[in-house]
Structure formats: C-alpha cells, structure tokens
Image (tube, rainbow, N blue to C red):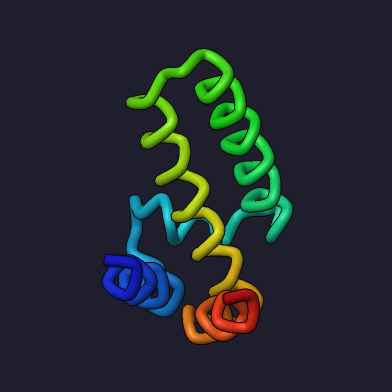
Length: 91
C-alpha cells in the first residue's frame, strides 16, 4: 500500500493535476512549510486522539501523518527505499 501511495504522490508531483490536494502541496505558496505545518497539526491531533483512547481517530490521524510524511520525502527527493534502509539499520 505504501508503495502504491508513494507512486501516486510522485505522479501528482510530476503531472500537477488541477484539483489535486497532493499537487497543491507541491505548488503551495508556503513551499515545504505547508507540508511541515500539516505534519505538526496531524501529530498534535494524533496525540490528542491517543490521550482520549479514540482508536478510530488515531487510525485516521496516523494515516494523515504517513501521507504527509511521504509527500515530504518526495519533496526532498527521497523515497521509500531511504525510509526502509533507515528502519533496517534500527532493527
């Protein structure tokens, strides 16, 4: 699933389809700060959901974090292999 999602993100980055939220992140006037702000916002929302033991909201916010993290990796010309390599080192 992550590979599929990352492929969609990369495609949106290249094609910049009108009306695409992903494309808008790559062209946002704030640049990468827009994605960084979203990561901060979603992280806070995840923490609050965890505090409230709201599993459904935790899953939702976790997905938002993963999505925005993948957008950030793409912005920085990184990909899932970079993430996998780092995780393997920590195994």
